[in-house]
Image 1 (tube, rainbow, N blue to C red):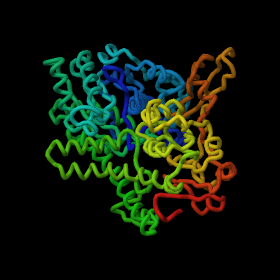
Image 2 (image 1 turned 60 degrees about the horizontal axis):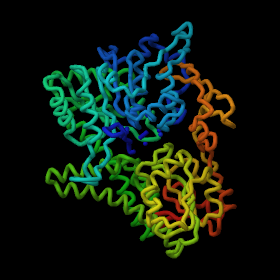
Image 3 (image 1 turned 120 degrees about the vertical axis):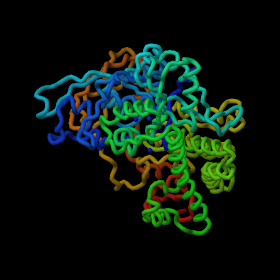
Image 4 (image 1 turned 45 degrees about the vertical axis):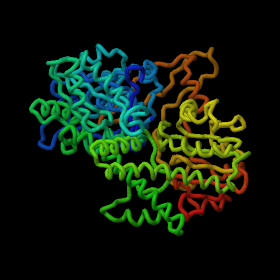
Length: 610
């Protein structure tokens, strides 16, 4: 991150040698505080959690933590660590000064519901207002710092987390399959130069099996004879629900060398988590198992998606309904209902690359049959998007010239503004080959510049796929995108795109609303309302944020195009669309019968709904 981002899960930061978006407000993290929750004293509430044996697990000797990488993993992880360990200073280090500047401002670079409030509590401090346990308001100081000063931040740290980008190689041996370790190697070398003896280095990024040994070798080469311990602590974040993943994890894996020093390091890291995670959910294993477990977890989830999508192709030919099949097999306790939703497949920055990494590992071990098996999971994912694009083209008898197509949703999943590895890119690439008059794009969370950046490789001035007669335009609202459209393509599973207005949408606490700035000459005003939030029975009164200046580009962008959260009025879209009002539902969000009563023709990837 299935908002502290991401797919699957999400990686990470652009920290390298050159340079380099949810939980609903009803989450227990920010639920109403109650008197019964305040069983512990203030210091115990903030610094410890009662273990299964009744004892309290403190953070031990850890006083300073450095998280290298301020991306989708590093930033949110650091914020939650700081929230639950207020006596420890947590610094987030990145070479991208613009990214660090946004973490220090009201405009975070990652969109995740509730993340902004966690950052405000940990970064700015807050006034603690609880009942009974505290007779009067107490100030909680800020302990979350964002910095570009690598020497100071690393040299002071007792624990250093590696949360840098680990993309797939695009060059050389293993191109398209192996993991590009450039950013990881550069970060480890920097850590080796400045870390104090005895510091613990923790892999947080998704890395190939054997990376811990690679890190040890770099440390030994740069600082021979200096003791360091290397742990594996992979993230299991799903973008759009990252806060929930971090605050209520299914498990926390800590991989160590198994030596006495390694086990001591693992216990020190575990003590950070026991501030809020039950001891029973913290698993200590060896580093290779921990590294591989992350790849396998993503691969197994992606496998389920590709499996059900392969069945949707059979449904198209037989008249079966893939939703009914998913419901039927999901009742089997051995299978379960999750990740059985047929659609466009998986996107994001993790599933595809992690499967490629797993397949490459098998290939390098001489296990070609195993590598072929996992490669097929990615192949089926690409096939599903090709099927969808083909359906659109076939419905217009192979001729999109002069047509306007509205694309609803560009992010790879709902509740995030992350455009990396977007499914929409592959669909748009195929459609542009047919030279439509316009592709009108709307996404409730994505910024226009992020969308255009992702499309640049296929829509560049010199790219033959985009003749000058074709216009790709990002629209500020859904209705202008759909106006006079020949067809609507639903590519992201955002709740606001659902067809039934009788469905219950999650009730949200009032969000901080940016104050619009009418002109550059007006005085800057406070951007966010004062807010109260509750966590583990403690109520925080957030410190008011300093206002941005009138020249703030982010404020202007938000005032011009605020995040859209209201349900789409499909009757309004029907009024402004061209007949026969075709909607290609790539996510299975629409109630087909209801849409038909409004004059729509709904086309899906299985033959059960057309």
